[in-house]
Length: 148
Image (cartoon, rainbow, N blue to C red):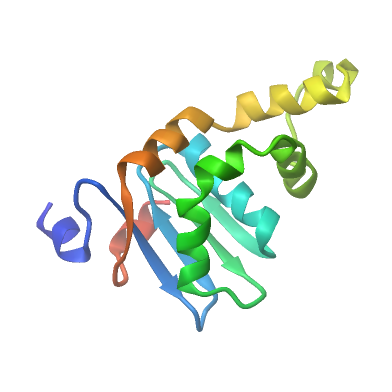
């Protein structure tokens, strides 16, 4: 517990590690796989990301183009508005191309396929709760990334 506090982990904070030299981001949400997968999927709409690693504890990824800490703050602070965009889930589906191992889904109309995939893969409500009740704070390197 002391190590967590010394690293910058505390109630009401989403700690982030941002390494501009390695082009690497860790967002420590402790909010679960579905929330963290949605975070990385949202970032994939706006930036060319790769090496995505979503765990129950964090979302991490590398980025190819220039991204700075302000870009991360901007996306995370605008998530509620981003999720209210009419075609956001279609964009996420097109950009991420995550597969569901169920042949049944292929027989549904496209709009229903997208909705079902989103419901299975992501947790919008918990992500909204997370960003509404926590602020983002830059921390130094943490050992928690080894958990994923």
